Structures are given as C-alpha cells and as structure tokens.
Amino acid sequence: MSKGQRHELPAVPAAVAAARAIVDDVAISLSFALRDDAALLVSELMSNAVRHGGATATLTVGLGEGYLTVELHDDGAGRPAMPSGAMDPSVASGRGLRILDRLASQWGVEDDPDGIGKTVWFRLATDQGTTAETGQNTMSEELREDRTVWS
Amino acid sequence: MELTINRSKDEAGRDTLVLDGSIDLVTRQMLLDEGLAVIERGEELALDMAEVDFIDSTGIGALVELARAAKARGSGVQISRSSARVARVLEFSGLDQALDSLSPASDAGAGAR
Image (cartoon, rainbow over the protein chains, first blue to last red):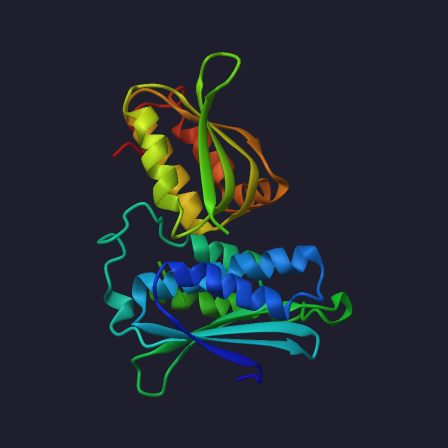
C-alpha cells in the first residue's frame, strides 16, 4: 500500500531486533519519542509473525506524507485457528494488540487475496498537525474485530 | 540490543536481578530462567530495570509469568527501579495493576497456574 524500503526477514526470534533496527534507520530523523514507539510497534508485529507466521516475513518501511508507515507481510497459514498457548503460554492474548491500538495513529490487518497470508500495518503521525484524529477511533473499532489474527 | 543480567542483593538482602539491555522475544527466556531460579527457592524477587532500554509485550509476558510463579510459591515479584521507557510500557499494558493483583498480599488463588 505504500512505497518504501522492503526487507525480507526470516521469521525467527532474532529477526525481531533486526526489524527494530531497520525501522529505526528510516525513522532516524524523527523525535526520540516517535522512534521509541516505532521500535515497540514493529517489535509487536514481528513477534506476532514469528509466533504465528510462515518462514519469512516482508517488512516495508516508508516515511512521507506526514507518517511513518510500517507494514509486515507474512504467509502464515491458518492463523485464526492457531492455538496461541501451544508454544508460549506466557504471552497473554491481546497485550501486543492493545499496545498497537494505543500507540498507532492508524493500524490494520489486510488479508491477502488468496486468503493465506496477511499484512499487518501501522502508521505514526510524524507531524503533529497532520494527525488523523478524526476517523482514527472509528477505524480502530472496526479493526478490533480482526483480533483473532493476533494473540 | 541484547540483555545482560547480574544478580545482587538489595539493602534488605533480597535477591535482585539487575537487567541491562533489551527484553524481547529472544531475551525473555534469559529473564525467565534467572527469575525462576530465584523464585523456585521461595525467595522474593526484585527486578532493577533502570537500564532496560527496550521492552515489548513478549517481555511483559515474561514478567507476568514470573509474577504468577512467585505467587504460586507464596512469594512475589517487585520492580524496584525502571527506566522511563519500561515504566511507560508497563503502564499502558496494564501490568502495573496486574503485578499488584498478583502479589501475595492479594486474594490467594486467583490467577495462579
């Protein structure tokens, strides 16, 4: 959905820190607060992809039009039904999602046309004057119904 | 972007893990292993997180797991110091309240594994 740098990452735990570093490289001109939020949010996306996604994930990061935009695509199959407790019972459902919903200016989940993979994305407003306050809450309410893709 | 853990004792002789670095999907297991080693002796666990520069929900999950394990043994986990970044994530993930509810002083049984 946006232009930006694309990075193919293995869906392994070590890639979570790599994803943070990639995003921070793009966000380097932004405030420390925004860079912190961006690192936290991409860590949530990548951790989710590692736990529930396929073998690789594609990270796209773009800066422009008043936003830092981060998208993470993975080919994880059968994610809505995947039991979240099998590998890691300590990761309480929805905590990462709550952080995403709290910090992102906008976020969403888009299914691939083939119905297998998905893209989870978020945007952080980089210019306080262009924050999309109107519609932001509506969007979040709608997307809450997608929480089955996340745990 | 890694995690270093040093064990020490605070003034009260309580076991303290001094954490330095990032807590994420990779390093959370280190925190769990070190924390559980203290908890399984029945000791109260203190975490000094003043030098933690990053934590995400997987790290928060590890803290919850430690708190539950401690509670099941009649002990508790306390965060003695935290960086601003850690404090912020703890607050908006609701863990500051969760830790309270998991402490041994609260109603026994609820939330224990």
